[in-house]
Image 1: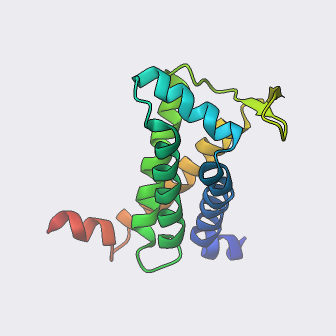
Image 2 (image 1 turned 45 degrees about the horizontal axis):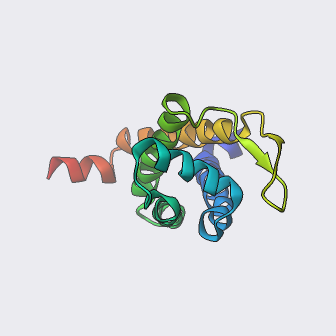
Length: 150
């Protein structure tokens, strides 16, 4: 238990980076899952450029957050992850995107659904980022709080 207490920030950072990095393939290759997500948002907002450029922007921000989590600017990476996941959760809950996403085969044909797995991963990633932000803000030497005071 002591190991977990000492290492939980690292474990949470690894989880966040795992979720973000494994999703990069989907965002940067135009996978059917990404096409669906950003296509729904493009239709909702009436902006064709959301797909694929929105996926590229979100993927790039996720990559930046993943890198920052393992540097001295880890709190900024956690804050960026919090912001990204807040947006994802809001879009899942309050748009036609929904919580349960379609599952696709290798040809891009819908073969079922994910049972809400993507949404649950977003929520767990959001909670992990919140825990890291709170850890930083409550620390004596807070990088985020120091920036706000300036």
